[in-house]
Length: 363
Figure 1 (tube, one colour):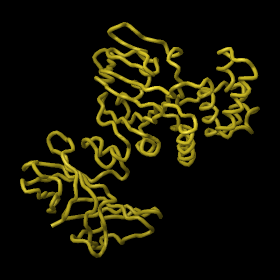
Figure 2: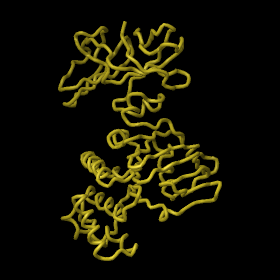
Figure 3: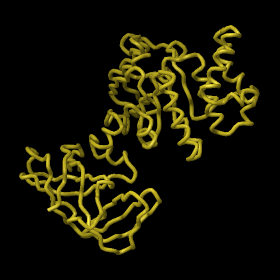
Figure 4: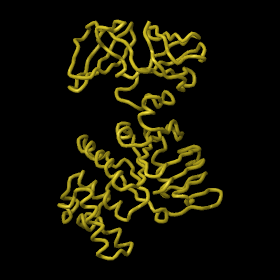
């Protein structure tokens, strides 16, 4: 399976810069998610790799073969890149059965009938849609149509499968089921998947690595848990995680003491940073509420969901969000004690960059 390499790739539409100087190495057999808000350049990046959009600058290679190079004038069309593309719109032929939809591309490639039959049956079984082979798209649910679209895309055996927000038309329960199927499918097909979404939960649960972008610029490229625990900057930290990370303006002293939101704490890992203005980032699940806590807070509101409860705390006028696991609840305006556990992240106030990660001990 192929490795995909982007070198200094840029795309401009007049004066608007959609993607700027993007360098990306997509390893063989990986599941890479391009993540970011609307207009960040993720779909444009996907389309440039697939050959549906022509970059302004840079070069792209797939499996060691240059498919685009602005300087050398190389620009292979999509059908020469051996890739499959799954769109948000399933685009199934309404007048064809499930079997015919999957077989259609193979017939155009002049496969013989027995080979087509074997391949279609293999995909029907893989995607658990054998019972629907004689049905038409209008007779299928959204999730079933999605499976047919995936089967049709996989039919020719593309080296790379591109997916542009393929689950966005499905309801929440079906999206969860399809995430499970896509992850399993990635393992079973041994293909390289490149996936576009603005949903950070999809990126977290599916990917081997996440490429997060903002206004056409790569912000961080890392495995999802690494990105969650050690975000490169404030944008990444804010985008990854739900509920979002707590951000509190503060000051770091030369001896590693952080003052923020009326609190004072020792930060392990601040050696050599010097005194500066910072933003302290704390994940909600790392705020521990119990009787052994070292500081007191008032419960502003609670949002119990059964498996966990999101608690809004008022600490000396500063709002903190905590997550308590289990079916627990707290009365509004109740006094509780809390402490921090595991690691916090310190961001430089001026640049927004992550400058340290370490344990935060309240004083």
